[in-house]
Image 1: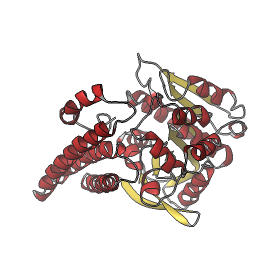
Image 2: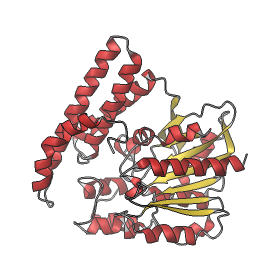
Image 3: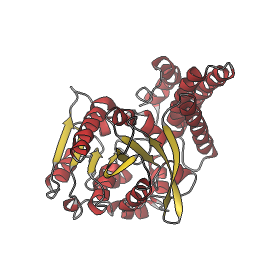
Image 4: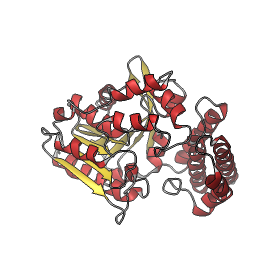
Length: 372
């Protein structure tokens, strides 16, 4: 993922090569040593590249500095991702990531607005990436999943692909992710239509967004959030599940209780407790079980796309098939499965994002253009 977000292979090798021996020898029941080494190597790389960015900025080379700041941002993200929740080091790396991201996009003159969405007595931080076409453009609201951030979503390139097709993107740190969790202490809630409502209410006040052409896309656990939002927030004109999630008890519930399950981050259980706002694994499991599309997906009345990897080891493909099959009131429902030959075969296409991102962007453009 670091490579796909903009990292350089030689720098990634610099961070990872000393870790290979640890990775081969680690005790899967106690990988604290390997985890600490990972954080140390990646944060050292991030700090080094950031220092180069500072040097270039001092020399008035803004575009070059911005490029390095964004690369340092990728490396801070990669280090922070594997640090345990509650550690001061994690929060420090998160702030470093935010600093590099903001400086990078400003020096690169990216068409991004740092915005705040009012939400139930508080607020949610978001990034608005504007399509270049003047006037009221369609827009995709981008929710997250379990363990990335709005900055990560931007760096993966999907907002650029939407913009190339005349679609703006609103990337939201909703409850459970990014700053909402790390800085505001907001765990996730299962009813994602509440975040969608807040976002659409805010977007309807914009002069550059067509309120009749707002869709939602979300990855990983977002395969539950996006369909749930579309089922209950009828102002949404399109819905894309970037990786299915019919029944979270069958994915996060299983991962929570199976120490040998494929997990996306180190310290997964501690992250789950923070994410779900739970004190115990039993409490987390109860909250996980509330996340199901059973009795929900048939309420979707807008076009629906589900994209899924054939080799997804976190969510069985049957969950993708069921999501589409039971969305009986969607006027256009489609399942697109990516295999190893084409790429994007792993969970949310993590082995190669571009096939999935391209398909999502084309589909969204076709659907939202038809509503013009």
